Image (cartoon, rainbow, N blue to C red):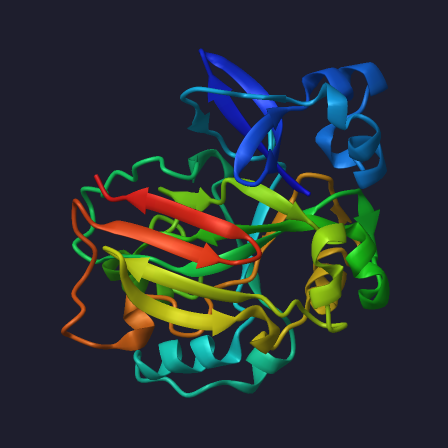
Length: 291
């Protein structure tokens, strides 16, 4: 299933996307007294006749009505290695010991097609191609072999970065903070785990992502190449801490998925008017224009 939220005629709707079109779920959810997290394929099939397409113009909203917390990881070895190299640093053994993460600003989420304002404090605006793992139920001290049962679904994400500020912050061994907290884009919907289980390899999902800048291919990579698997990430996060329904665990940047990692002076930094799109045959499309 592909579950999201849209706004139509100044009213917000929980919706199911079918062939790219949004269908109102309110009657089904209200009658069953459930949230979208509790929706199952069986419930949908039993109530297909009650789904009403939202016609006309609509705006995409952040697909979760309430995001609890967002943790952003550093889980792809190739990205970590290249990024450190570009700062004149070697890989350190500690990177292979724990799947490190930081907290980012849940109140700075941008929806699909929403414009991102270029911050006044940066001259090096960058994209970061990522996937968000949405937690579907509360859990504490979760074992990695059980982690898949706690994952509600996946969504595309773009972790916008003020790279010049980030470079300064990275020297202080804390953060990142201001370089990241101004905007994070999230996909138009969450693709639920039941739809993609066939792509699960026990560690991650075989899902290819492409990114485009002004409709020109920028990167291509696959989620299956992640070093720290989904189970390891969930287990580490939940050690003596309760992961909650509505938490999002971001994978960190896919290999080649940011300008800084590519270290190509011909690319230049993002500027006003640039359109960034992340595409996946499985997870859809996330597009934002820099304003």
